[in-house]
Length: 300
Image (cartoon, rainbow, N blue to C red):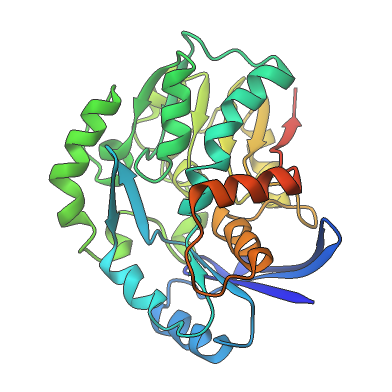
């Protein structure tokens, strides 16, 4: 049986383990949180290196994308370098393939309308495929990278503006410690509303769940959320806040959705190419074979 392990800088409270069938292949899928402890993450990777089929790197990004360019986080690269034998992925391959397809899937199969609807993507460089798909579908999108990543009251309203920001800021930001701009460890369960007016104006809220949970207002009545990494506890919270529809871009595994890094690690394990990086078309082919679709939960 293949074994995939996500080593996450997130809270250990969100740990989970399940055996899942993928087209007749059983895979043990496991998530181990280190509560923000980077040294522990490195230690776990070294201990399991060569013993499992693929690692996911969670609670942080290894890469971000914008304007056709890829930027690497120095601190995340240091953690990932602990894996010498087992391939390690951060989910960016899935974000730029699977998540691009979610918007069209919802429009074609669920009748969800996006044209002219106000949308908020909390951090678009982390979810560039999803952000671009919303723009192409005709949504009026606000990108919250400066709002929620750096705490600056500056909304970005175009992909070209996002690309300009990335060219200026990414070379600097990717050299900073992860906790400066992304909630890790126990901070992932703390809610401190920020720039609530942008949440209130949006009908569709998309992006990383930890950003959404950290900064969302008390009320999300009637909103559609497109996100990931949602546990049963998170679903109860969102229902209580009034969310109408919850869409997780990754499928249900044992009663919850894992992060994109987990699904990408599953795809890498199934491909069996070792540390050789998969191409976008290879991800697309595997996703088609597995018939991976988003999980849709309607609360009202």
